[in-house]
Image 1 (spheres, rainbow, N blue to C red):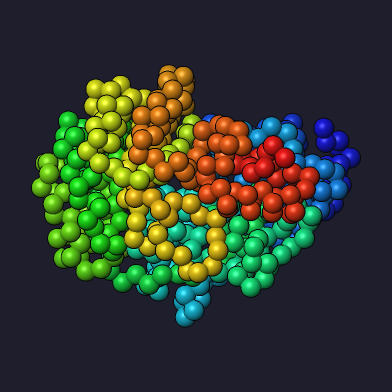
Image 2 (cartoon, helix red, strand yellow):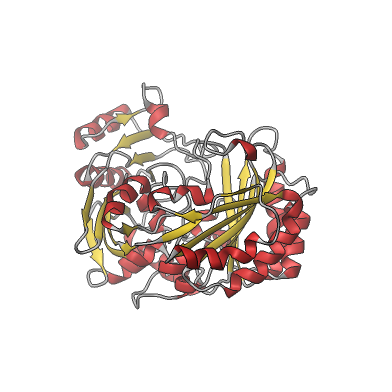
Length: 458
């Protein structure tokens, strides 16, 4: 246990707040978006800048104290018990260079702030379906952007990183400076250090057509079957996914969608709106929509494509990369999660991969999924009335869809507990071996031992 004398010493080392469990503000400081992973550290330190991070890591190394990191808590999978939690949400550095098309982003910045800063310049970032998530943690896990088939994974756009390794050393890494560390941070998550800032290249975005179309749940078989035939034919200017969704009573959701199972088609087209409408037309003819919201878009409205939950809740996310999504896969998924299945999951989705997801920039990385055709995304709810049924439903769907799986998971969406062999599925065998070697080099005492950790059995 950490003594009060140790905590007083930490107070002397950092500018941000340092709190013990019995102190005012502790619960608020450790809280995150996913309420299913409530942390119970021995102490929490709210860092305000890079100097604070260096000091915290040096203190942790000197005291052999394990360290966890949280910005927004969207990616929290497992509760942290004991140790030192470092919260980075106060690190709000954001510098945009429209001429060079780059953005330097601090560890606590959310995508929403970046989107709003770059959009007036005709530029965009490779954020995911929820702009409220933290940019750095999302990118370190690879990132599955809404426009990923056009521009690739978010990690593909990383130019350089500032990272404090567990020895308390601040390192500036890119493709030329410590290239192996840089490569493994591009998709390897937070196993090797605490990133204080990243610099991304931005993408030009002049025209965008997209949004969501909602169909009655009763038409799920027709819509998913049509999607399985239509999606693989799309040019890479198109990004799309489809989901079986139980729509909540939420002020952000149109009232006519409340409290019913629907099929939600998500679509984005980078290019002229008439071309986007033409490409989407076959899906509009499959069934009569409950609501069609697809049309010309401003990128600042990108959250309207997926309409993700905006309030903290008891979530669990997991999934699998798939080799294909054929007629047999459609029927299998509908049996487990379609109308009449009594599936407790609020969302079961299929995302089209391919396009720019398959390409690299020639720089090594740790991203998985480049060889996949689709991604199966499962969102569970752990409220008391479904807490027992949800894990069972997740396992049953994953098992049922195993014949179509590549065998690989995605680290940002791999919230099911498991040992080292399960965690290793987020990467290829070669990348995982490199991550384990780097973990032994940069973190020999395994200080960063929370969340999706590599090398647990070493």
